[in-house]
Image (tube, rainbow, N blue to C red; front, side):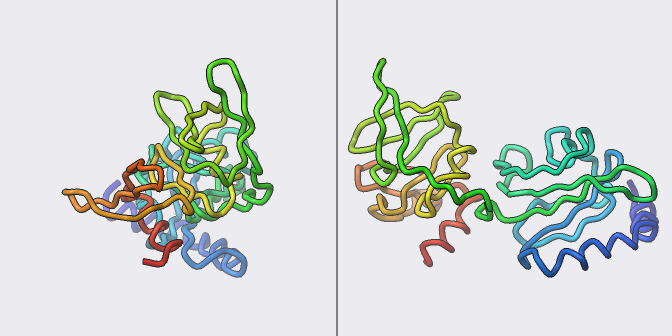
Length: 226
């Protein structure tokens, strides 16, 4: 869509600013707000941390906006960085604009997960044909590898049927996702260093060295205050 058409769209949907005004009292300041109508974003109030949409951009078929437009139901979801290059937590609502079905999407930082209240106290892992419950504070890190999830405790590797995305919602606050493939227990960190390309690497007390992706470095800095 050219600049003139975008300007016309902004004018046509100028009244959508009311949604931002109504939401400001209860959402964090670093929140993005989007509205999708049909298959296009018609309103976007961005924050500095989130996905960089453009007005008139088409709705991604795997996005939360597409889900709400199709199913007409409120949706809460934690999205990894596979779609837009950065993880985020979204709450989306079906709404009506000028008698047309639309979706209102509130995009928050990935660390904002209200459901993260009933924390796991243990994880049950599989070795060969045996299952063992492991206290959660003994888990040093969790890894997604070859479409399976593994966690590590006391120098042992265990397989679990729970995905990283599901784990992230219910792990205690001292667990932190640092990469699409890794969640770490911050009490298992030995030190933080940089590799030859100046990317951060987490070295754990058990000797494991795990990369920190750019999508998660700000969250790591904020939590560890460095």
